[in-house]
Length: 467
Image 1: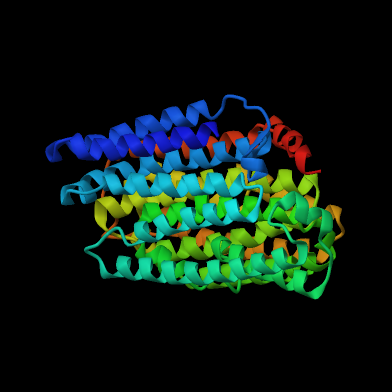
Image 2: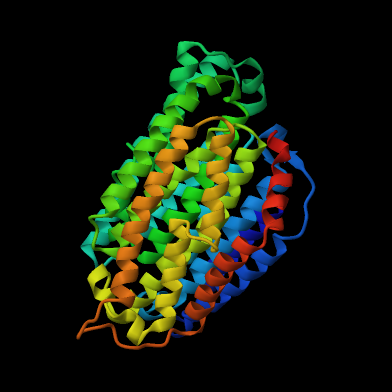
């Protein structure tokens, strides 16, 4: 529990700092939080031993530890991109420490969720990861749309948690245990177990924004602060995908002949729904919301394998997705903070005034679209290879069709930035240090991960624990 204890210590330090730091110097908490979390992220890369605690309720291994490191890197980038917004918009209202405390509390819940060894620890982690984000979605209290986002998220999350908990109760009724290892030994394909599994899947599908559980996504992303929208899109979704993958590949492996058909249909529906609705969007936050829904559909291709190859491709794709999506959200945040503009039309002529920002956005969108040689191409290629290895050729073909659709709407943004002219183009501005550092890290990640093939081999080796 090294990472969990360290993160809890950071939360307590920030709570104490909020009490003792004078209100005129409260903005120094930004530097403190980033510094402490940077140390926490660095310490996370030290190796750990496989272990379990609380009678098997909490467990960890090298793959789980590696995935926590992915989440840490994503949150660190998000903190860097959020620093200017917090300093200029939030700390002036004599608040802001709550942002870090809620964010880190949510991340702590995700740690417990992906390390859970039974459904009790899983559910506690799920709730701890969800409830703080609902408060974060409504963090801009002066904006009505932000309050609406928080209400929509908390109501939707409550419904999803209830459905998931109902499914867990059915699994307990048929197996007489809440421990994953015990359930895996006795699980059978009776109707009550299947129904419980489907309800449990529906609860997690909400967090991943899978169709038809995606209706909250665009409205919440649009109303929430950009930092919170990117957290929901990347960190929250990544953790939910990881625990769903673990449970499907371990506990529910004997029921694969059932859930693979469900995943097949939902993957197709999610890809098409996300991509087709993204074509119509003008607001960049809604645009990226539907883009993230489509990306979730692509992730499901890796679930179709049920083996080590599927684990490796999903984890690799999530790693790529973290850098790509945070780069796109980072540019949107930088522009919104300087100008308040968030629509696609506002980006016309951006390359002539802010060429560096335009290049970052182009790399991010190319990676999300899967264009070589950036990392997103290899992420999708490995997912397609995994699905094809099990004979799902029609699914791979439909995924390629969706890649083509997504390329079109990603190019709409690139066309606006590079080819369109505007008399009211966004004027030149220079980002501050933290934002520049956050964007640089995302660009390095997009380029290096795509070109550094041993990283995938390393992830594949770690994935052997789920074989």
